[in-house]
Length: 458
Ligand code: UD1
Ligand code: CA
Image (cartoon, rainbow, N blue to C red; front, side, top):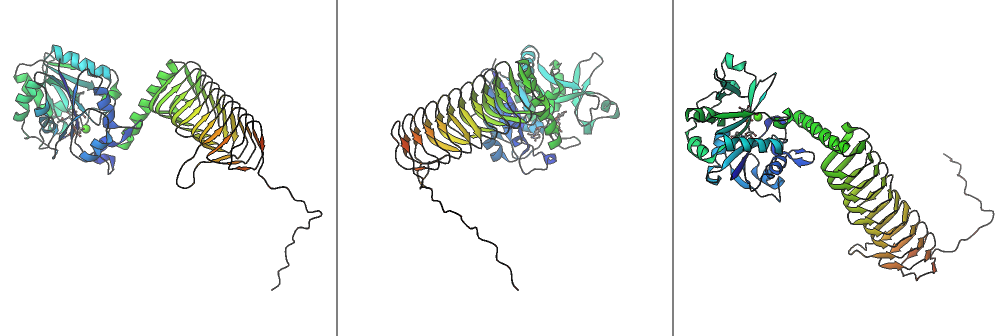
C-alpha cells in the first residue's frame, strides 16, 4: 500500500508568545515537528509531505537529515486549504494520513492502526471523548451511530456543543478522494476558513463509511498551543522514558527529576541519581552509578563505572569498565578512558586517551594527549597543547609519574616509568626510567623579618 503522510505546520502559534514558529520549539531537546516526522518515518516506504508557512525557513532548517517533501502554504486559509497544497505531491492510489506538526507525541502504534483501518474502510478518523470538549470540532453521528459530519465549535448549535466526542484532527483517506473533494471545499463558515473537517460530510454524501478509532493514550493527540502545555507534555514524555528505564532494571533517584533529550540504553543494576540530563546517544553498561546533577552527552559507558556528582561528559566519549569520574569532572569530545582509569575533581580532558588504571585525580587539563597504563598525573598538571596557532600532542608512557603542578609544553613525550618532579615545566622529552626536574633550587634566608605596616600620619 503506497502511503503519504501529510504534516501540517504552517500555523504561527500566537499563544506561544515567541518569535520562533511553534513547531521549532523543542520537546525532549528535539523540535516538535521532528518528533512527528520521526514517528511518521517508521512507516515502510512512506512519502512525507510537510506544509510550512509561518517561518518556513526556520522550520526547514530545524529539521535536517530527513527525507521530506516541503510544500509552502503562503497564506493560512484553513486546514483544508493546507492539505490542498499537497495534492500535486500525493502518489496515485495511495492512502494519505494527515498529522499535525504541533501534536508531537502521536505513537507509531496509532499511526499503524490508522493505516490498517483506512486500508479496510473508506475514511479513518481519530477521535477522543473529553469531559470538557470546548474549542474542538465535534463528531456528529446519526441515530444509528454513524458519523455524518464534523462541526467546528464556532459553527456548532447549542445541541451540538453538548457532544463530547471530538476531532483530534488526524484522519486517513485515499488520495483520489482528496484530489476530487479538496477543490470543492468552501469557506462559508464562522471563521471564513477552508475546513478540512468539511470533508467528512462530503465523504458521507459519496457513500463512504467513516471509521473512528481512539488513541491508546490521551496525551498522544494533545497539541501544543502554549508553553504551559509544552511543559506538561515534556513531563509526560520524560516520565515515559523513566518508566522504560525502570522496567529495564535501572533505579532512578526520582523519576520526576530525570531528563533524556536523546536516547539512552542501560544494562541491569544501574543507578541514576536526581537531576541528570542525557543528550544524544548514551549507552550504559551494567552496574553503572551516576551521581546527582550530571550532564551526559553521546557517551558509551562500560560496566561498573561510577560517575560522581556534578560531572559533565560532552561526547563523543568512551569510558571503559570500572572507571571512576568526578565529582566535578569535565570530559570533552574525543576522550577515551580505558578500564579502571580515574578522572577526579576539576579535571578537564579533551582528545585524550587515558590508559588502564591511570589516574588524573585533581585540578588538571589533559588535552591532545595519550597516556599509557598506570600513569599518575599529579594535581594541577597541564598539557600546554596550544601555542596560539596550532595544537600539539603530549605522549606519556606506561608507569610514568608526573609530579604536581607540571606544565607539559607540547609536543613532548615522557618515557616509560619516567618521573617528573613537581613544579616542572617540560619542553624536552624525558627518556624511559629517568627523572626530569626543572624547578629552581630553593633559597633560604635565616631569621627573615617580615615587613610591618607603616603608621599612617595625616
Ligand atoms: C482543528 C480542527 C478541529 C480539531 C482541532 C484539533 C479544522 C477545521 N478543525 O481545529 O476539528 O478539533 O484541530 O486540535 O481542521 N494549519 C495549517 N494551515 C492552515 C491552518 C492550520 O498548516 O491554514 C495547521 C496549524 O499549524 C495547526 C493545525 O493545522 O498545526 C490545526 O490548525 P488550527 O487552526 O489550530 O485548527 P483548530 O482550530 O485547532
Ligand atoms: Ca489547534
